[in-house]
Length: 253
Image (cartoon, rainbow, N blue to C red; front, side, top):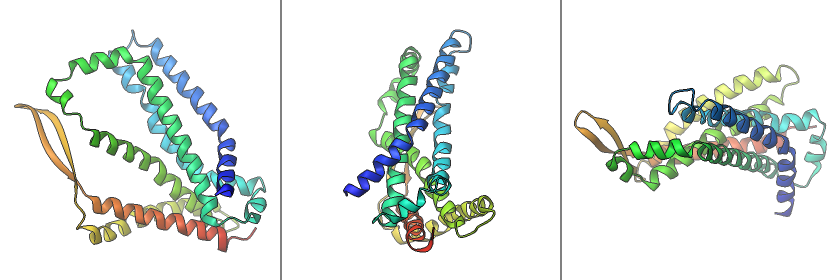
């Protein structure tokens, strides 16, 4: 465990620059929006403040590809491969560090945005119908967080796996990575859909959805299938372990 923690700390130190630059860009964006609050329509700056949340998953995708590319480029892969660590330990330390950075930047973005726009937020909450305000569900909040985490983690795992596969080739690695990345997503959907049938016995997750209809506020209960979620996790774990096996057993440096 100590060895894994050392790897994790190493990855966190290497990502300090990413945290710093991303934090400064988010802060600059929020300051820019503050200067436009009294010039642009009400609520526009509030909505635009969430744009960085759409960029963070793209950063995760790039981080996944660069995670081992930087090791090869900086010739540190020789040291990494010489360590008495399993492949899954090397891969998981990078995933854990990038995932933590993803969470930190997300919390910073949301927290800073809500702080600067707290007046708009209180006005918006005051305009919501009482029935809608009372329909808040902790389950919906938790599911939204898990979905956003998945949006960042899935591209990371797939891009990291794509680069490791491309290391089999001495030329056109970027092209191989793109092809493998697209193919792996296709397999992710197809295999997950097949495996999900094996978990049809799992109970679905009920979600209450509310919207404004012609007869006022309407609520309907929708059900989120547990089987596809379990199947997705299993297939992602398969890609993760396959990438770890490729790194440990197949790639020579």
